[in-house]
View 1 (cartoon, rainbow, N blue to C red):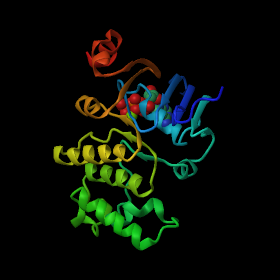
View 2 (cartoon, rainbow, N blue to C red):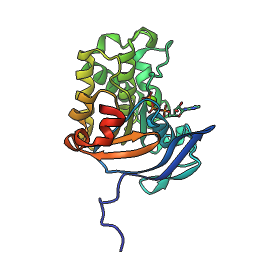
View 3 (spheres, rainbow, N blue to C red):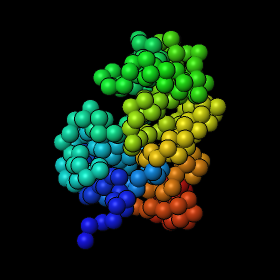
Length: 242
Ligand SMILES: Nc1ncnc2c1ncn2[C@@H]1O[C@H](COP(=O)(O)OP(=O)(O)OP(=O)(O)O)[C@@H](O)[C@H]1O
Ligand SMILES: [Mg+2]
């Protein structure tokens, strides 16, 4: 029997493997991401979290396994093709163009959009105002703090209307006030139906924002569950939280 409508996960990952030389960065990861959820991925340095996102958005091609988004296989597609399918991304070190204006940075993913440029620009202005960066719209991208640059990447996902947004350490080194704005945007996007994969070492943020927590260690999933389950799991305490 076919699965009932709406039950199919947005993203299905099965038996993913990716190695660098002798290092198995991903060693058989299987994970389903339900639509309109926040899944946190935590784990020690080098456990494969960033590699996992890099495989989903096409920066790396896994040696084994499948990645299926809305029924389409992603393996072998280029990052820009994957972006067009509706997957947005922020990076551990933000990728903002230093020499173009903040507003043009927000608009970067929609240079070829069919929407009217004036409307898109107005939307970008509103988004920047909402996160308290309205005054910075005409500054250069290089004038922003690291945290502000990460927030710009999130606004790009808004503008591009990405349905699945991959966040790699969005809160690392981010000023508390900016972090609160980040939370607000993530919650608002979630309210409008978006889906997130959130990598973070900031456990407060993980507990505050996620529906489920998945724990990586040495390229494998060693535990998954809610805050209480993760905190009580001996393997998680030994590998990471302890
Ligand atoms: N481009 C690469 N070339 C060689 N090795 C790599 C590359 N990318 C990742 N690795 C290795 O793969 C493993 C997983 O790295 P990854 O960056 O995915 O970890 P992470 O969980 O994101 O760590 P962190 O919390 O420090 O960001 C590490 O051993 C890392 O050295
Ligand atoms: Mg990483």
